[in-house]
Image 1 (tube, rainbow, N blue to C red):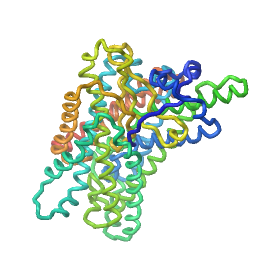
Image 2 (spheres, rainbow, N blue to C red):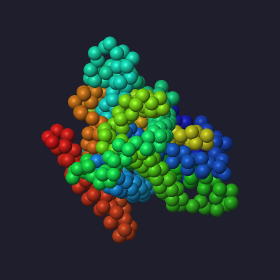
Image 3 (spheres, rainbow, N blue to C red):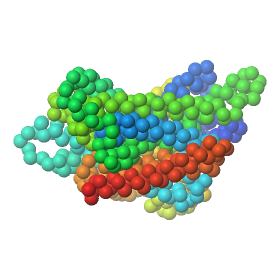
Image 4 (cartoon, one colour):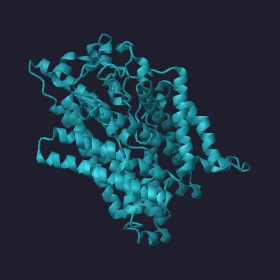
Length: 522
């Protein structure tokens, strides 16, 4: 989930492959072509390492701070409906990712916004950009709330004689850690954060399961659990649904992950065919591998979510709060304290990774006119995905899957890759075409808006519910469904596309309405 600097090697720069097998030979790849040689790829062991690297990338893009509210969602919907929602969300993620991969392969476009622009038009692209900004800012708001919930008791315990309010704690944490990290123009300074989010969630899962096992004979919990197989209230399922959907929001990262997997796979096939004097296979192999990556990643995330949510739910029952870590703070458990501090650290370093893509997208919307007349070659907006350890071993990266020219080049697509509230897999150091003053103002505006909203919104589950019902429905259901309908080659695919479109629209409208009513009017 950490930012990395990209170093592209020969497999990503073979024009024969990109021309013959459907992968664009982008300028960012061309720039590296003369600086690398043939010894970077071993076709005998490259595919497995990249396959597992792609799984790691997609898991990193899926897992995040949303896991903190999933036990609360399970309490709201009950065990039966809650686990059912996790299964439905996992299935819809697999289908939507398949549609995105099909569209990306068909149109040879490897950014989410580029696909929307090409298939649905410029107005739809602008809506997508606005939704990405809302999504990033919303994730940042959730992170501020989460870190305040986690660290407030620690700060008050360290300084017991100070009368610090919750708002003061949030402001102190934001101003001393989150804002300074967000002011970096390039994100390579934060590359050490790679893996912190996934490690923290793994530690949280282990701690939650151990705590439940140690506390399983608590009779008070047993009595409470017996009555919570079903929703806590009539609208409980509707409150839980967007929180669960948000936990699987990873679709905006799919295209670059597929690009790297497809490019490397076709390179390996090309070399093998060349050695055997045969023609390499078409692009069905990378699509098949991407489907395997998707199924493996989504299944792993669903399993992890289920274990954490079920263990915490059975442990605390109806006393569960919107942030599950709040339930463990009164027990003074060293194990849970370490897990909580780990999540707090992951949230803090993930905050600028959400500010960064929002700033890039907002800058391109607001200041693109100022770049008119500049040389296109000097205005590439490079991608935001980092390279995995597996891909680095083979000399490949997720970083250079597309180069986006400025908004006057005629086919520009601004990539704003965002991790899902979670701490995420951003970035390969894209340059910002902004002055220092513009950079600071945009950063203060985005980070300040996140702080201001965090001071107003009552708890973290409200943010996840609103984002899940709005941007997650758009990115994970409606837009992939529209792309799938365009390319559907069978009645089954058409049916799946309409399920995503209609289901995403209805779920988004209804759940958002219920969340707003329950939060502000009930």
